[in-house]
Length: 452
Image 1 (tube, rainbow, N blue to C red):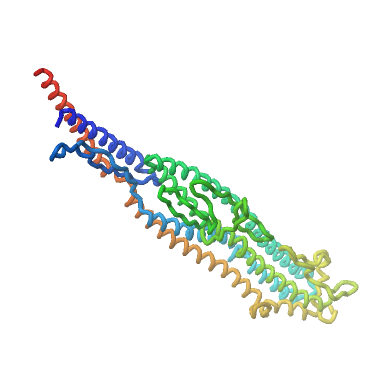
Image 2 (image 1 turned 60 degrees about the vertical axis):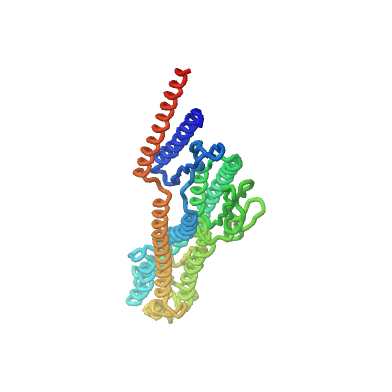
């Protein structure tokens, strides 16, 4: 075996362990980078030198730099992201809605509705009292203002949800475009045999972020290029990508592609939570509020219109409420200007209070769904609270699962500084040994030259 082979073997060891030290340095540098996956240097022997019946080793080389990652854990994290961010978004928005009702408090609609009915009961004690009549009007005004406040609050929340959905659509487009770019870079690295571990880390981080907004399906091809669909609609691969937008059809929102309008079938992510709130949950809450208020208005008017005022001349057929639309419960202007237009006399005499008593009894009457208005309202509030609790519990459950999965990912793919420092010393020792071997070979060569 020629002396030059010793130099070649030593050189291969120097280069191989220099590369290994570079990989270990990168691991240590990214020890606190959550998107980084630990990399491992795989050594392999160089093809031997065959001489007759003998084979001589020719050194060592870095065969591969392996990215330590568990694709099963990644898939589970993305799947649970869909569920967590969907539930978390719904609970957040519904909690904002719940605060509009100010329950339980003296400013809540429940208290104001009770005060309205009680004011009729109090007026029945002294039908001619101007202050008690004014009290009825004021309680009706407070109730009307609260209804309008709740309605406007829910309507504004719908507008906010619409704006947020558009913002998230922009974020989705940004991520999809970035995925297309990194896919191209991964493919280019793959076809020329370069390592693309850092690019793949970047790709996986983008996929995880995208899964927070929408449910995605991911397949990885032989070149490590990610093919991604959103809600069953193609989004991006190594050559092409789609841009998405929020489509508003009447009072319904959907996520569609910009070029051909293909509709994504969403089942998770914060975008799904927002669209479900806008399309279903918030309209249902407005409908329930409308139904309660319209029932109140119709029943109060049906009784009040039978009575007589104590104006001069006496009038009858007076509606207490003149209309309800878009959250505005209108009180009769004549009553607002002159409380003597309150028609609580059944026979036209000033002392009669039968109509006031009938109106007060509405509090205990089963007017809607076999329940009183108060019971319907309490059920309304309870349904919202139950929805919030349900989504919060689901979010907490998914968050616990995500925490466990993140810990699993960290244990599998994370960098252990202790382990890497051991590798530093191991590779440094091998590097020093190779350098020493070159020195020895050089001394041998010098000895040979002196003998010539």
